[in-house]
Image (cartoon, rainbow, N blue to C red; front, side):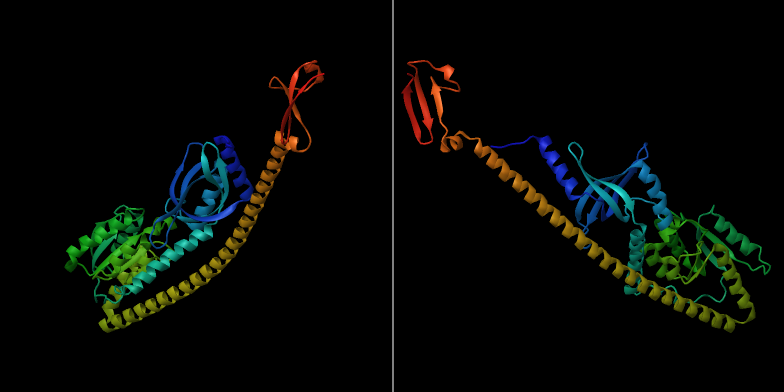
Length: 409
């Protein structure tokens, strides 16, 4: 029975992987674990889940060495506005490695931030479609604003600069309108923000008769800080809240899902204060004018939001369709190259085995005897020289079909 050592086996596996994956490969995966070490390296665990059942389909170790990680991390975060973290779907270029001691792993060499942006946009559109399918996307917008908006339930961080600007704008306005402000403190960024804001809404609901509207405000910040406002659960609670919600999330470029489901959305906390002051200024003129202006603003806002959603949906569909076609072509080419390499390696290994069998066969005693050679022994030991025998010795000669005995003369 032929056998090889474990190190020989792992060496063959290593050689096969090196030949089969002699160039970097682009793969799609989700980061399930990620940690940095003191040396500046980054170690990850990449996984793939079934899109329907969420069952785990694949899992492997990966690493980004320090000299690459120092460039990749800021490049990804500046391109996507997201921190490189667990839970993100990424498209990365990897080299496939196998070590006899440490096993199989991937070394990440490059990352495509546009893929993650597409994934984030797709998730965002999925939430928007779900809200529309549930029939609640416009529920808060359909509420009528009170003629006089003066009793404000405010959700904000008490120490935020945006909250201070909002209060200063209301208090120092020359019109000197009276507002009743009640702050319901909440965390306005990070993983706890969603639950904290929903909890504040629940507290407001317990005293709902005391307020005219709910004001959700936050100052400006990075895109990553505002990710909590694209939550389905938060949008669900805001869309179905029985008081109109006025949102003033301090961002200038993007429109969050909270902005979309809120009754009214403006860019900054100061702009919310200006909107409330303007609302009372209109009330000073005529109630009918107020109703007309508000209806016009709401209708225009809804049309703009719907137009924005339609345009965004169309662009995302076109981008995803183009991306899928491109990636399918790439996968087909890679699959073809991989199959060709595997066939070539199998053929090479088979040829080696045939040559080895021939070599072994030609060195067997039976092969030599069949081709006219003989083996002669004296007392059971093979004779290789005439000096080994003397007259009178009894010798035995073997040929391919038997043997015979002789006496040396």
